Length: 234
Image (cartoon, rainbow, N blue to C red; front, side, top):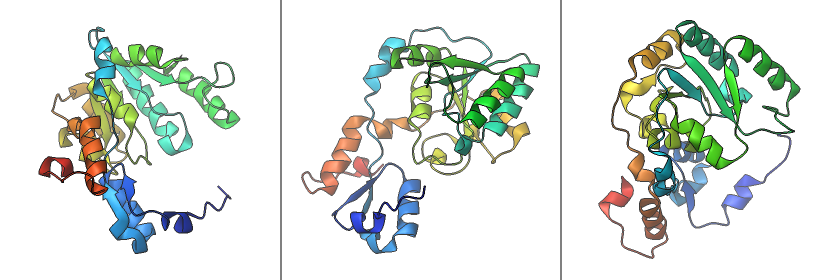
């Protein structure tokens, strides 16, 4: 904020601008219509094999997890209120976070104060100093919820789905591109969100489109290094 990144000038240096989601591409095209022909959807490359060692970790019944950043653009007040509702129903609600400045949730003192309020509402904040600890904690979740209002492609949700959690996400932004419609809620309907957590719809989700082999093939095809195939545009 307050810094001129000279995006318009910088974008002009490139023949192709790769976007991690169709939603990101749409936003970029709206902001810079002069570069629309340079924009290409690729997805974000993930090596799903890195999660295999966590597949056998037992799920904890009634464990609901938020694994998004605790930040303003993730609507923490919605998270807190949903956590309050779910805790009253007997769910255990955790927020997984990467600690900063010791074990703090955020460097923003207002968010740190909000986290204290959230704990009084029943949320448990779990620090994860390492990626391994984070994945071990995430693998225990039965349901993973996001309340984000700005995600071009949330790797945190892709990881949760890969580890067998039931996703609950807004029917907006990039989420409909890979999450089944039955797992999407109208933004930001608390009652609907709560009902999805209760029902826990088990549905297929199109995360295979982000397998690193497929994304790499799209990169190379757009660069003209290999012939494009139909599945590369999936």
